[in-house]
Length: 203
Figure 1 (cartoon, rainbow, N blue to C red):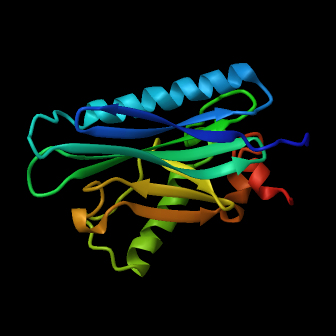
Figure 2: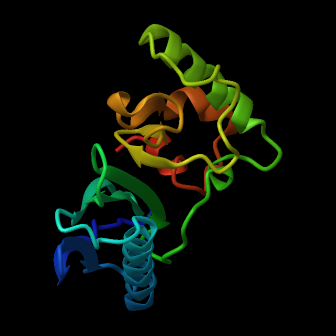
């Protein structure tokens, strides 16, 4: 495998009335065109999160956008964008959207593309989520049956992390619910050309 250097990540600031956003901007990769694709996707996603929060007309309203890097190695770039907004009511709302790229091309991966075609990845992941709910005594709003085929995820620490948004699986007090699954637990169905493939290899 060719040596892949981490992308350089800097923070671009964007502000408008009652809002302060920190948006990641990448550089230093092997391909300027891939960097442009990644940066365009990050900016688009940050804007969509803003739009999803609704109006900031309430005098007390505020919005904060930020991000967390998850993986930046082995030609894989995975991160989460967050947007917190208080628009009135009992409490604010935080949205999260994660993106996982191939750094050298800018390709964005779906959950299905992490696995071999035709593999029943949903059922495999469901077992880990169900076990996690039971082990942590999470009181779900409805009995857990299955993740969505495009359930939100990111890649971190040689793990696939499946997560659920606020109110999606349990009450607001639980916050985001994360279920990390070691890539080695999924090794037999991993698409070796996708983001999980390099995580199976030795350093």
